[in-house]
Image 1: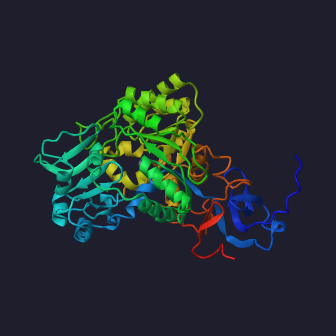
Image 2: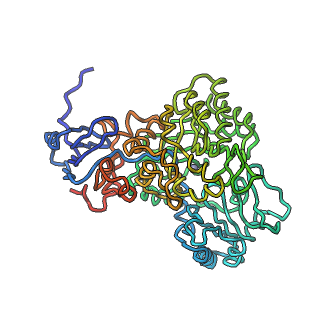
Image 3: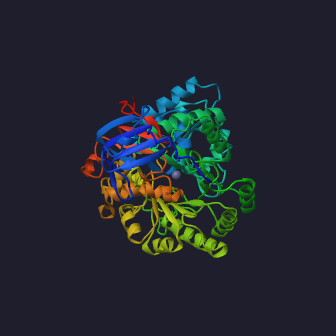
Length: 545
Ligand SMILES: [Zn+2]
């Protein structure tokens, strides 16, 4: 076929930057965008001037450094967005303030309506450094069920909520979870693991349209922090419909790669039937919204992670596994045969070892798999022998320093100082040849540069520096947070680097993160963010004509 020569290309944007780090090799000074794509690059600031047309916006950004937009390997955009509809207790600084916000919400709510808090809070942000008690929530909201979820694995509820969910004094703990009791044996309102879902199931869910709208607010906040892609680490099928609605209404400011949760509470045959009923597989969608895969949760968080040795805080306790390994293997084999990629939450070292057993058996049964088909989420604790199994098996790992940053103090209490220092030893992973992708898992908009600072210093929010020997350099941290996640998503051909033909997802900083003193990184914020060739964050109108 013979084609007429195309019209000479005229750029939409020509950005002349102090530096544009490609993340693969070169550093450029000029980056030209056309439509959704990076059309051309040049090491010479004036090297693309020949592509300027009447409609080209020339951005004089000699004071700025361009990077590929961040790609978060593990974050909960849906949950963070839904939180914008809930009581924002993440802003509370004391238990009294927390309870006051819950009380005010209860007084404003319809009689008997559930009062739900945002889940992006942590007691380490409260001066008392403890969870609110059942009694405090009862006093704040005597007539409304209160559900205060904290992260993915813990919640505090009041007496009305326990009653509404049918949790009596003698109700047995669910598999993989615990209804907490105080020292006197009575219910203390603390729910761990599967117990959270048992009670949360009674709270109403927002409508699909409300969720889609919340995703607009949520994704805007991430884009403002320089994030271009979020691998959404856990949704259900209704939430996937909300994502599709948000996609159709052009409400998503970032790209999303969701994982659909397969519940550990399902009997194996039902889990397999659920997967067979999905009628889709990994990769379905488009560059804005594409299904990444399925999500399994093998153990708990800082309170429920399955450990090889007992908890430092409780020698009788070594965490819990939510799946029988043989059952999980059966379900994973079925899923992989149907074209699904799998991400499995494994926080503790016992969960990690168990997951290696499962993934190795899956590979034995199914045969060799492409990289990033079977993925470990977190792998917070692991020993070198188990890490070697992951490398040998080609099982990639998503790593999130912000978990240590946020929960370092708590990990020191529950796991002890020695294990806390060993959380996510990214340097050792890399030395062993592991495939890694960096992210946050903060369930709220979090500055990725704080994560980069953390990877480069092992600094935390309240626990000081944890295991400084595991620090990596800034360039490597940035690569794991861009190219690493692009590889995890199977998209290095179009995302994760600044290269001609790639999708135009860029972030600009008022300083060069590669040259800056590492301690100045933690608070570095973007001057602008571009996703898909469109400015999504531009407070100083640097991209305006
Ligand atoms: Zn997560």
